[in-house]
Length: 208
Image (cartoon, rainbow, N blue to C red; front, top):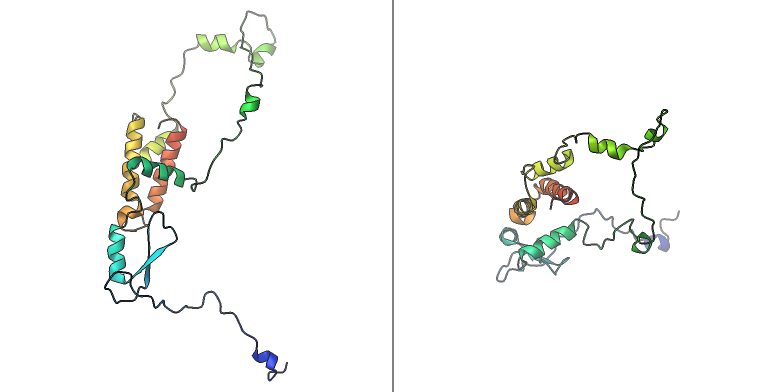
C-alpha cells in the first residue's frame, strides 16, 4: 500500500458511538440562570420525548416537584396505569368467535338412572357420578387459591378483603411507591411491579 497516495489521504473514519461527546453548550432553561444546562428533565405529559435543560441546582428543584399525573383525576390516573400494563396498546379477546359460538351445539344434559353394571364399564365413563356427588357431603375448600392469598399478602390484605378494599389499597400503594412520588427515585420499582402483578392476579380471580 502506498501511504503517500492521495486516495489514502481522503479516507475518513467514522467516530465510534462510545466515544465521549462534547458537553452541550446550551444554558440552563431557568430564566435568569447563567449556568450551563448539563442535565435533562422531561417536560411532562403530552410532551413525551421533549426535555428541559437545567443546571444541577435547578434540575433538583424541578424533580422534587415533578408530577406526571398533574391535572388528572383519580379515575384518569387509574385508567392510565391499567393501560400502562400492556404498553397502551389495543388488545382483543382470544379464542372467542361470536359468529361460531352461536352455531356451536350445546352439550346435552347429563342423566342418571338405575342400571346394572357388574364390570363397572359405565362407571368408568362417569355415568352415575351426578347422583353420587349429590349424596356425598361436599368437602370444604379454601376460600381462595394459594396464588390469590399471596397476591392479597403483597397488598397487605387478608382473605376477607372485598373489591372496594383491594382497589383502595392498590391505589394507595401505587401512589406511595411510584418514582414520581419519591423524587424520581427508582429503587422502589421492583416493589411497584410486585404490587401491579398482585392486583392483576386478583382482578383475574374476579376479586376486583
